[in-house]
Image (cartoon, rainbow, N blue to C red):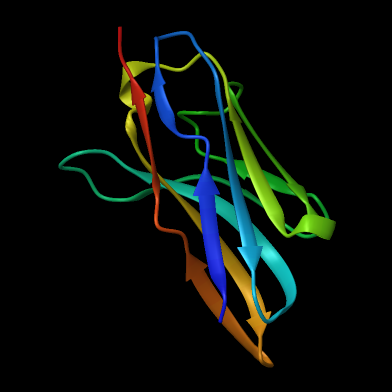
Length: 119
């Protein structure tokens, strides 16, 4: 069984910082793509950031320059450092992973972690 477990969400004031983490565990042979999406109330889920196995990154324009994605391949973990947070960053943040599991490419989602930016 494969599992993604996220952590690091919480309440932060505007201008503050948070660091999210997502650990993939189970029968994973390899992981290529690791990323983060978010879903704000009454909005569709949207792309935030992604990183490939060789370290190439991509960001949504709304977070570029404020958020940094990184990964630790040895720990099957992806991080999202979020700085200069704004109220519009409030959302449930989901980890997204493409991994080879039992010989098959699979897309995996975490359960989500809530980030609330408010004074």
